[in-house]
Image 1 (tube, rainbow, N blue to C red):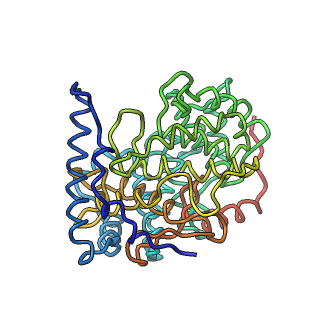
Image 2 (image 1 turned 30 degrees about the vertical axis):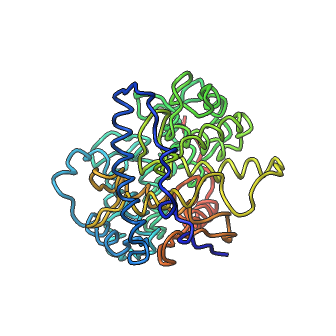
Image 3 (image 1 turned 90 degrees about the vertical axis):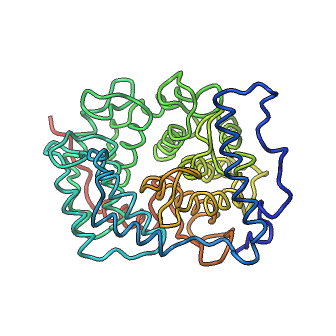
Length: 411
């Protein structure tokens, strides 16, 4: 079932001045920046409100696809600072193209596989580039990119035996994981480890001993999850923590109602997009990191038999988020961005599109309900809220690796 959101667009109603920030005549650096963003966003919404009949909301698929395809072939000098994040670039681009239902040529996909193979360390895990130190973040990105490509060549790149050894080398006695050997510890590492281990079928009985309990200690008094115990709640860490607990089947360790309340209040009342923390600005990337929490929370509360759950919508304003992405985050020359005035990049392109997908599709398996703002051609493929790759790619990877035995730990 599909529902068009165009007849009920936020920007076609009277401008909600009541939703704008009130600083009580005591401006701060934060309030000044917030008002600048609200002015920029409000100007865009007002322009569209006056011309909606002539210019319906459209996802510029061709422009975005061209930008992404070009990025797989060549990157400008401005990306030199991401030399240690090259598997991330592969993942952001191939996932975005998949959401847009754009095929990746076999030769290009094979080139990506060959490059990622060169990023794999001899002792397991993937590095940010060839000859660099393996790290859990690019390991997660590489595995996601390879599973998204989903060919036999892609699966065969992943050395499951050494990957398991790598994860054990990072495991700490309290259940947490280092990001790399001798590196920092935070919730990202636990999620990256749980994600790659579950996709590739290398979870052993001891690998995640204590991990779920450690993540639960990271839930802050606000309701969201911080990077480590006692740290302020943050959208990215909250997603990583909850998604990891879903994988580990230990979500009951969290105060879910408190978490739901925290994330629900991160959707900006005026802009429609999400902020990452209290008192911060809207950012297009949190379209996934925050909105992506809602299917996971919904699933948990449904399993608990909560009778108040909607059968057609997630627990956030799906139309408002789509409007923010379509109106405020699209670069006219392709690619998506943080907010008006910012530059496009592959990171924000990936997570804006992922958030847009979450906002369009309700349910799992067969889509139960769709809410599409703008023209029907805006519809993206659904994304899996735990892994952020499309569900059929998750299913194929899990099926492929489930046919293989879990590697044994070497002494």
